[in-house]
Amino acid sequence: MALCGVRVIELAGLAPAPFCGMILADFGAKVIRVDRTKTAVSLDTQARGKRSVAINLKTAAGVRLLRKLCVQADVVLEPYRHGVMEKLGLGPQELLEENPRLIYARLTGYGQSGRYATAAGHDINYLAMSGLLSRLGRSGEKPYAPLNLLADFAGGGLSCALGIVEGAAYVGSFAWKSRGIGMWDRPRGENMLDSGAPFYDTYQTADGKHVAVGAIEPQFYTQLLKGS
Image (tube, rainbow, N blue to C red):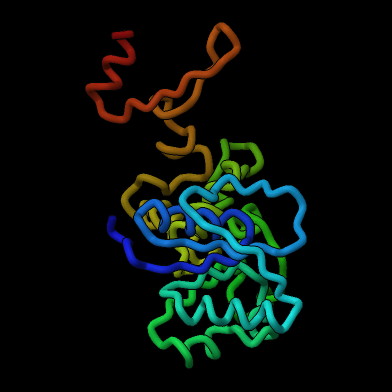
């Protein structure tokens, strides 16, 4: 496995961090998820391939234990809001002094600086801030977020090192760069890939369900029209 021997400490959080941890585990990393000692029923569906340990970070002993785990790790995935780890004395500056090779990945919604650094948020907020949400939806209708796939999972989990807001913009760079080649230069809902073309859309069927059509290439569109 590509990441065999890599040790990862994942601090339990919502979608982006556990998704990122699961990907690393899938590629062979040894991922230890650090849970709170008092939590409700876990809804984490991304625990595949991980081990877990519950640590009470409100105690000095718990903080010392987490420090020991982090110092011995190769990667730390930290999903907390701005300043939480610094208050515990476990911020990147402190841990990197003890473990200079440590990769300290922070998955915060709005980064570590700026007016929104301490603000809470969710996928739809990050999409809106990145500008990507304005490109999603049909013409004449309000924008819509495709579940929480873009900012949380693609922009957050997959683009972990970039952070959530920057990651959403990074993932959405295809749309922005495509405007210059005539592929995404029209208003929302009027472009080839956002319901503006009859050969790339969804249609309701006679039984009340839906069928997805993706026949971009001329030869496939011809087959679609012929019904073959």
